[in-house]
Length: 297
Image 1 (tube, rainbow, N blue to C red):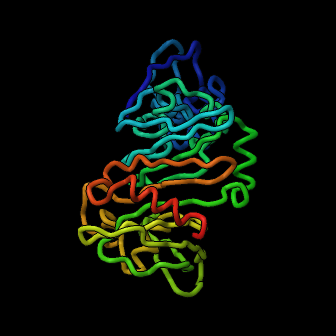
Image 2 (cartoon, rainbow, N blue to C red):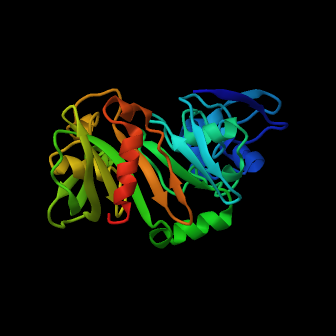
Image 3 (cartoon, one colour):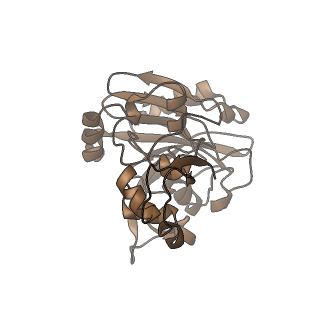
């Protein structure tokens, strides 16, 4: 953990009181970063104290980006569309995180989507993609655009399409509805059920095989809802876990082969940059085949 040196001009009865007075910190934020003993420690004026950088820069985005190349697909006055590589988080959880899409935006001077919704680390993100998932990611650049899309997500976000590579000859084309229940520590994994139960969520997707090669199938998924790990858990339940998705029974691979291909809302945002899919499939041909079925899918 990184620290910064900080000093007060005068004595204070406790660190807690000093932080509230000089930095306007809430008791909850102070409690998160300092033990009771540290909070009650008297402060001597003009002496230096080490404060955690995550506390001092709470809700700020680190301007350093450490991660793979990110492409800006398109941008207008209201939105910016990015290609998220696999192995990158969408947004940080603290200031010392440097491996997220928002860090990338700061590092290249794209501040607009980071100056809104500043009380939350997700800022202008309209949705999230898993750490392992690549593909199109859309951020709002104005409070008006963010609020409108988030408040009307089911009507403004018309359709969401993903590519996934599964092992075997996929034969489960169709619309599927299941019920999901988080399991494991902090709900790290979704359990898929046929029937509703206590604390379950209903979710649907439509899936169609696009092509197959070398014993693997490329499928196009139309995500009807969007709960955490939905595509991964549902394809696994159908008997076709995604290649590289060891959490849901997939075979180990150089990545998890799930890609957010296309989001349709005010304007269509599409990302055909799935380079690693070329290991098994011709991307141009697969993209054309996908487009050919969009109208009836």
